[in-house]
Length: 430
Ligand code: LLP
Image (cartoon, rainbow, N blue to C red; front, side, top):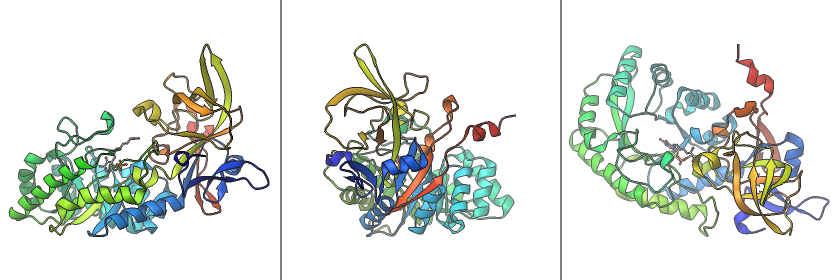
């Protein structure tokens, strides 16, 4: 199989024990074995790949004091959070629910949590104050008031950064671009000084940093550098104004190569991203917080699905699989093109097909007009790079229970979330 259809060291083809076939494995476990044991659709993650990518980040940023605050929204499974906490990561959360997950995974990680989001509620703010998180990324003047009130009520000091909107365009899907004034995120960078002065006057609030996040799935890194230049100017200005700026939170957004055409390995990609981010900050002696989500967990996960039926409508050929848009919505929502590969390698003639799910919408597809080796009913397919924003965005649409999740580490495969049942779906209804 070609390089681009594998994701070593997580997912690679190899001989199946006791047969002449080559199958896709996750580390030391074959995917057909996982399908037999846990059923499909199934999310499968590689622990080794997560470790490698965290380590690549740490190496890329070794020249600057930094903490990786993994973005929980990308994949919030408790076992994955626990693995990341053990690797020394902190966390970026955007809701009370995500904070609870982090605390459940590792209570001690609270001191490495940054809390972002434009609509933090009072109960969420209070929970974060009680947990004594590292940093509140404040996104409006009104939120600042709510935080000040909550902190005074609980007599807890809140370390704050304003999330500034640097007005820098990033080339990505419009739904996940965030760094322009027309977007709802952050406060205009031009109004930041006034807001910092006000924040510093409020008891129980401690000005501690600046945060920025310009969008997600960004593969041209220049905008990161431009945004960081603007942040660095603001650091200097705010220090002149007498504020202590200890942290710069650079957000997330480092994109991955869904087509896997790139010849650059992740360590090289991380290094050039790190150059863009770090250069403007050199000599400022700030502590850098990074909020990667996708670039850590995306390629470390696949969605394993089985072919239910084949059918031909006129000149269109459809392959209907047991996974659907409720399990992985990225193709339907962002026109994302995930590579899909047969689990059993072969030399079958390619065919142009649509790969679709059972949900009752024409938008329920994983690939349209794609050339793929011929697959039979009952075959397994792997939808690659599904570790980020896959399970995290899964729903129960069409009353479909959500998939199970498995974490593979070497030769061991551990169920980290059992398959939902219809009873689970009905439980909360009255
Ligand atoms: N920090 C903040 C404040 C964010 O809003 C996000 C993502 C991240 C960090 C992590 O970004 P990453 O490193 O994963 O790009 N559902 C979409 C992506 C939404 C991203 C939302 N914010 C998708 O499937 O492409």
